[in-house]
Amino acid sequence: MRVMIQLRADAAMELHQEQGSQSVGSAKTQTQAEQLLKAAAELGVKLEPVHPGQTHPLLAPYFMVETPDRATAENVISHFNRFEIVEAAYLKPEEQLP
View 1: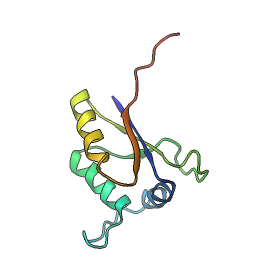
View 2: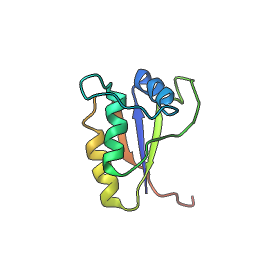
View 3: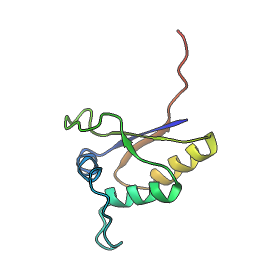
């Protein structure tokens, strides 16, 4: 199952920069973007950009998380929605024929 996440533009740009470096500062100095990455790691999932390396403001804010089941997806959505930088977190609907 795929969880889709839309972030604020400033946080999305920071995360695109953070994707290359895996350093995480102390809890006091961590930005919300770093805290979001840490939360993903604690949940056992990986936050990945939908459009890697993109800097366009309409494409950069979109990220995704692959989960093995619906319960894990709902847990990720619940945790991520607590962050101010997360504008939307939802389960991607299954693709269907028209």
